Length: 308
Ligand SMILES: Nc1nc2c(c(=O)[nH]1)N[C@H]1C(S)=C(S)[C@@H](COP(=O)(O)O)O[C@H]1N2
Ligand SMILES: [Mo]
Image (tube, rainbow, N blue to C red; front, side, top):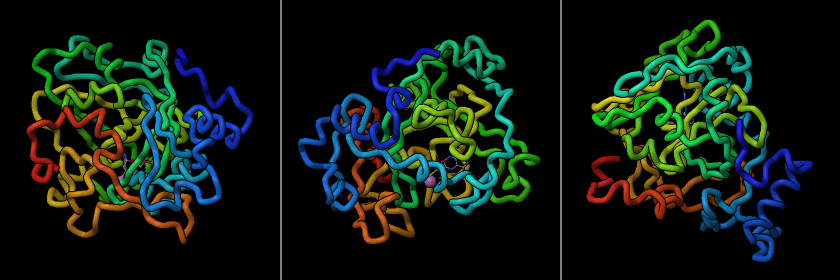
C-alpha cells in the first residue's frame, strides 16, 4: 500500500491537532473560520475545494461512526454501530466480471498492494438532508477498473454489497431487496473524485462505514456510495439500483446532489450538518454538493430535473 498524501492522520498526535493542521494548510485560520461562530452555524457553507479536499472542518470520528445508514444492520442510525461488528471482513475478495479483459476474483490484499492510497476530505450529503465532512482514505476506482481492463463496449459499472444474513441481521428481513445494488455511468466511475474507501481518519474502515471496501461518490446523494462491495460488473446497460427499484419517483439513477430538485416529501435546498447541535442553522445545499467545477461537464446537455 502506498500512501501519497504528505499529511496523514498518523503524522499527528490527535484529531484536534489534525484538524487544525488541515485548516492551516487550507488557509482558514487567518480567515477566522475556526472562530467561535464556526462554519456550522452559518447559513451559507463557506468552503473551497482545494485539489480534492474541502476546507471545512471534518466531523469527528465519533460522529462519522455512530450516525450511519447501513440497512443490512437495521434502519436506525445507531444500528450499524451496534451490530456491524458481527461482520467478518477478512478474508475478502471482489468479483470483477462482465465487460472486462481480466475477469475474476480479486483478493483484497492483492488489490491494495497495487493501489495508491490517498486521503480525501470529502463533503457527504445524504438524500435525507443531513451532511458531514469525512476524511476518507482510499484509492481511485478507475485504478481498480484499469487493473481489470475495461472493454470498449462497457458503458456502466454495477456494484453489489455482500449478502450474508447470518452476519448482517438486517438481511434476515425484507427491508430492501438484498443484496444492495448501485451503479455509475463509466465516465462517472472513471472520474478522479470517485473513490473506493478503505479507511477514515487514517484508521481501518469501521464495519459500520462499509468495511473493508466501499464506494464514495461525493457529488451524489449518499445512497450511491455502496458499502462492503463484493462484486463489480462492467456492462452496457444501466444497472437497476436498489433505491430506484423501490421508488423511482423519489430516487433516480443519477442522484446528483441538486438543491433545485426537491424530494417529493422534502426540500433538498438545505441540509443539517451533523455535529452542529440542535440550535445550529441549516446550511444551503449546493449543486453537485460543491463539486460543480469538477463534474458539471459529465452532464452537459442533460436535463437534470428529468434525469435525477
Ligand atoms: N450496502 C449498503 N450501502 C449503503 C447503504 C445501505 O443501507 N447499504 N446506505 C447508503 C446511505 S443512504 C448512506 S447516506 C451512506 C451512509 O454512509 P455512512 O454511514 O458511512 O455515513 O451509505 C450508503 N451505502
Ligand atoms: Mo443516505
